[in-house]
Image (cartoon, rainbow, N blue to C red; front, side, top):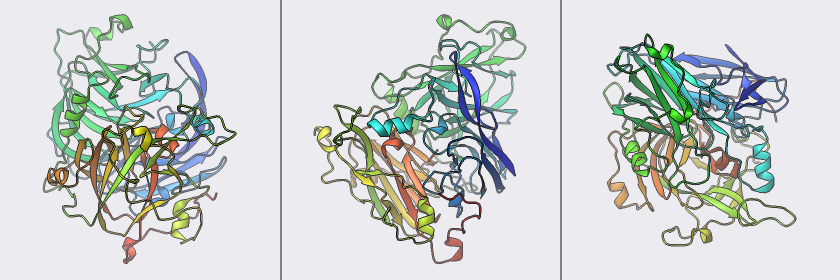
Length: 548
Ligand code: C2O
């Protein structure tokens, strides 16, 4: 059993010092390395003065929803001084995933990698000499634990972070960060496996390494058809495993810059800075030369510019499930049900006697089918399991977009006001072959919405711009080898269609993995009812499940 202590640790970045929440004093947190098929037990102890929980992002948690982690969805928080042991089995997935705190904005600093080693040999040719974790994050000079409270009070947006980070380090392009630059030593001729995780709170990122090709072999712990690329695009929540050959020649000085910067569809006054690190070849000049001054630094030639929509679209279209006899693509070819869910950012009228700092004196909110999710004061999964007829939640999530859904040419402001608030759950029968079409309404937004569903992987069968057209668009679906993921970047002003085998009974958080949107309510609880067989039911709750 592993011990995870959530504790404060004082650290300095960008010349600013503050206590941050960590696991075991590490930032980023400890890596969990397991074998496919392992039973995992992690005892999380809260050694701070605020509530916490941990989520194992992308772990399917078959029948073990109690160990999933989102606060007020599958459990009550672990209160100060208390512990909870997360127990689950890792099955039918292999590769890179990650874990993070799942309450307020604690995941800003509480996160780490999960590596699942496969039972069988890797289905790609490359021998792997070593592994390199590349975890992107964001750093705020001010405390992050209170951001959500502030946002709720004023209906406002959060401040942008002060830096992006690679493995907790901003890199030398940021002020006061020369020492805080990630440097990875590699040996010429060796092959490395990069475990890439986007733990940033609010931005999709492009990533590239100068003079090196990246071979994508797996995404969200599911193998892909390998393909070579000069840059990847990764949404918050997603993970990639890529192969890198350290094959650069002697005439270079042996120092190669790696860089990540956000992808936004139009340049917007968000944080527009770039985090960098270096690959440093052993036995070359790199061992003795100083890192280049920021003014002399040349970013990787292939790093797309911030608003490179064409690159983003083309990159995503290359992802395919491996789809071999050993690893067949299990996409449902037929479906029982299709549901269209709109994803909207909204403006809500300011309640009397309140000051609202969203936009035009209104509050920001966000919704799915115009329903903005409210986290209840206790665990939905417990209520659901006990058949509690609480009045605080209901199973009537709207299964249709609000009134007439057509945002083309219409002033989107008119359509994106005053969502409904509440805890309405989206429930399906056990075994439903479900298609969810996620339709962005394109208002107030310059970035893709990374929609994440807990407890299941899904297959991205189609994606496009504009409004989804049930006739034309379904005809172009990929039902052969669509990529399997747990998080999909729904294009701004476009849609993504995902198919799910709803075979994991429980209550699963489904939400935008941009933290500001989750805080505004861009979420719902996806309920898979128990089936008739004992093996189709949720296991009973563990005895140490925290009470509310
Ligand atoms: Cu990565 Cu709901 O979480």
